Length: 190
Image (tube, rainbow, N blue to C red; front, top):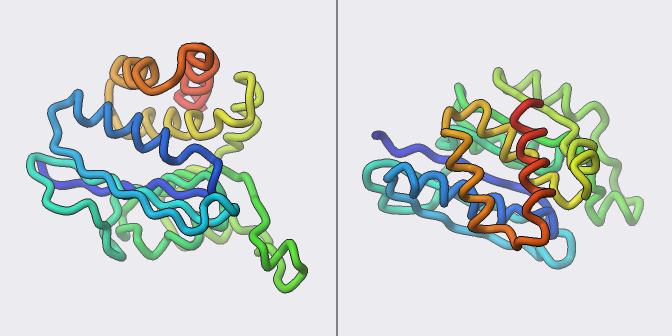
């Protein structure tokens, strides 16, 4: 199997680290060599969080260069736009339609870009934009939008749903297990 590269991006507190653990578990269960690297840019202050996940027969580095990502999974629209240069020309962008104002927007120094989802679709041939926040709330908690997006990704990636369920059981505390399983299923069928 050739090496494949996936970026998971969001804002601190959105659960990108759990999402990368779920994906890593699924890939390991399929016998892949997996490398994961996390970059926290002031994540505790609402800054960017980027996780690189690379897998294949043999992976030597977790780092993804511009134009190398087979998929970008984004928990926020502006983060999707920031990471678009990393996506291969034929790559897949899966993004939540959620918008979280960065500090320059909060302070009034800048405006959040208008119609960002439409602009992303103009620049990338394969964009899936879903209201992951609404689906997570339907599952029982807005905090489960990360697992909703992993369900959206799973539906398009071809990895068996049973492996995802096992990964959720291994990575999520028992008191949140049913909520996250429901969130995953909503994403899977979105």
